[in-house]
Amino acid sequence: MRIENRMYPSLFRTSEAESLGISKHRLLHDPRFRAVIDGIHRDELRLVEHPTPSWADDAWMNESLKLRAMTMAVPGIAAGGASAARLFGLPLPRRLIDSHLHLVTFDPGRKVSRKGISLRRHNLAEGDYWLGMPMHSPVGVFLDLSAVLTRDELVALGDSIVGRWHGPPLCSLEFLRTKIAERRYLRNRKRVEAAMSLVRESVDSPQETDLRLWAINCGLPELVVHPPVRCPLLNRIVEPDLGYPHAKLALEYEGDHHRTSRSQWNSDITRDEALRQQGWEVLKVTSQTNRIRLEHKIRYYLERRSGLAGRDSLKQC
Image (cartoon, rainbow, N blue to C red):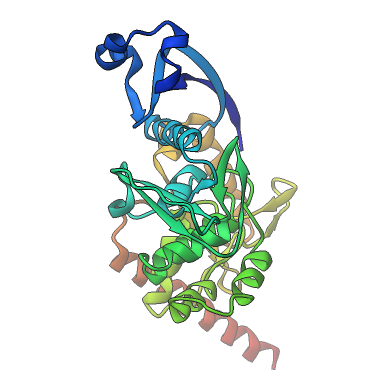
């Protein structure tokens, strides 16, 4: 994951204002010193550097600043639930994208009562610092969100935890499975186990997960994630997004960057030529693709390949 240092407003406690030469009137009325949370203010002119993912937007930066402010006001807390997922860069449904700050604590006596902030207590201490911020573990985030996510949404979350959407995996699939299996008490166990049975490593994006789950829900065989294809034309292994190796059928999800980036566009053409030289059919999928037609195409190629394989076996006999 590409990390860059970005400039953020510095934070200070209300009680520190006088020592910083800030009058009570300025503290209350000067927009330079807006409160981030009760008791913690920001100074828009005195800036500090914090490590930030290259993909982070303004909402990410604001949420991370709010978390840093909370750690100054309330020790022993960490980002959890939807907030931790957003800061990790994990996919969430739109209904969970808001300004609410979700926290966890491993201190049974810790309490937080603030507007727009919720705190969940955990007996099992699973947390660490990530980019200088206290965070609940990816396993804990996955299990906490199992209460509000559907099975397919949990699969997308799990794929991103063990995959490489925004960078290297947060943990391995084996580690995630082991930690979940060790839980004696697990809420929504059936949903969690159903989701975990479909989580796969090496997934590059939530769109790939969506396409794979769509195929399963249509009754199609499960697509293989990044099936390796040896391509002599390029003298290397090519791994399409998804595919059916037995049928030599590949599916490539094309986001906007495939269209707007000239280098990506040329790379896609070269890759597809190499795959077709090896007898593979390549189907392009976008957000606008008609899924009914796509299902018909997939079934056509699977049936045709099955028919060809049957004729070849008869010839051998």
